[in-house]
Image (tube, rainbow, N blue to C red; front, side, top):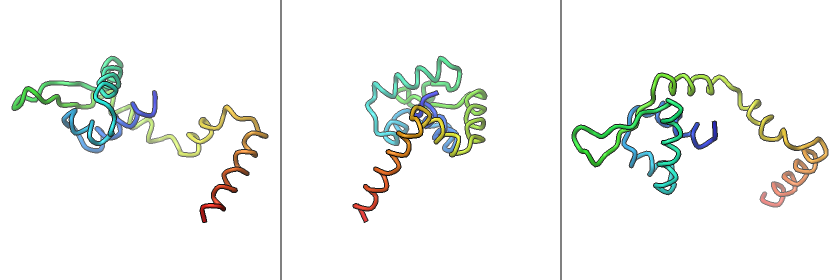
Length: 110
């Protein structure tokens, strides 16, 4: 699951059901991008979209039980495991070069 999808699930997990418009403002992305992202999550059975009973112009987003389980499962992963995945495409020489360059940049910012 992509980072944006995980971010949506995490926000809904922390805030509970919310209007799609409110989520759009939190994420600061284009409406079409959010709609596509939500469609993918809905297809996976991780969230539901339904019209607000009080205002049919609003769409309310809620996590399904599967969505809640996905958030709980990802919360168990350590940050270090995520870092390993991020840098897995680099060989040791490339990792050392990157580390050296980042140290140089940090030094210049201080």
